[in-house]
Length: 309
Image (cartoon, rainbow, N blue to C red; front, top):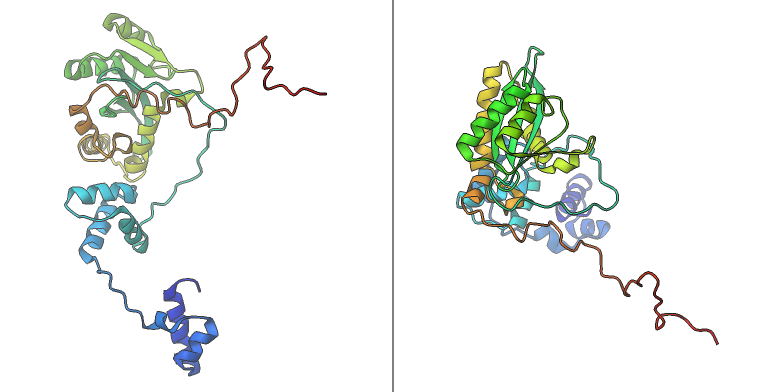
């Protein structure tokens, strides 16, 4: 019995079941009598709770931070700590789907793109229909603005089809300076090599077995699978394409992005400037400065050496 509510419940049980007085019951369990007589003055916040439950039911994979951003957009003035308390009281915690591997050791900081169309990332995501048929999704992301440029779903996506979709994106958005992808057979085909040579776009392949080198698209694929693919049953390819189009519009125009200071990718793209402060995630790293200067090779630090005698 740690919380005051649990203590009140225990005292009430002793009074009702055993006929003890309130004073004696409080003394038996070590509870102050003022705790029994305290009445809260907090507002019920019924409207806020109802709206928070409605948003959480619609977006089941959103935590309290994104719910806080969406509620602020609707005009609710609430502190994030108070919202977290209400979030826990309503038992709206997002269920974890499984373990996650953690990186061990140090890694070099990753250079971030500085402007629109500096770098695009490509990858494939697979899923299946209710009848067991498999289909694949081509995902394209702008690494600077984090916008989802395309979600192309089909039962087969060849290198020629990927090149055709990239041509369409270049007409709508402009030519990228670089495209990053893994070493899949579709992305290393002659069609892609010919397209990159004719379009004069630098194509960078990550090292085999190193998906962390393409971290932007891997993170996006995780959000796509967690918020849409794992939450929806697709009966046909046409339904999957409609759902992907709606989710892409919601991702770009409505969903707050934690790495863009809770702005949407479309909102960030309209005010995009050279991201000097985000060029390196950590410029100097998080390790503390050394207590003493490092000695140069071939030189001795005579002042720091211990002398005997």
